[in-house]
Image (cartoon, rainbow, N blue to C red; front, side, top):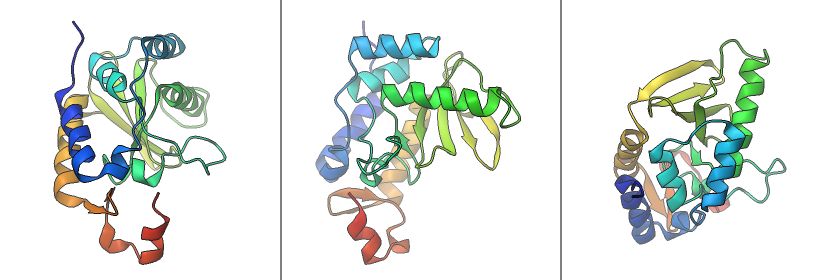
Length: 192
């Protein structure tokens, strides 16, 4: 039996009805081959909740104007004012990046093999990971240490994020927009 992630279904349905331009940023679900390739590249199993979310939607569209090919489009950062959900090929790339930053000595600390990055902000200095051993969600930031167990599960983080999205974000031009009061018209016009 395949594990389902009801809160992700609720989020995507809400987006489809209320913010179709944000909904359009979602990739189709990851194939079994893509998930197997990701597991092999990571060298660890994917937690059931993360696998379920990726089977439903394999992350969000990447900004075609980004020369590094790694930044989510602004309209794809709907789940929070910060993060875009990574597709499988960028999960492995983010994991390699975090291993290089922490385990090769650029930063103090250690990036553990069973931590699986799944969401990042634009320049990857901040992000979220699922602990493959416990299912808890942790975070990293450029200005601080890696924090484990920030949320007890991916579902818990998604539920909190969905609540915040519905109650703190606005829908502008069929997109979820965070902190709309802090944006001028030129900023709003640049959202894609």
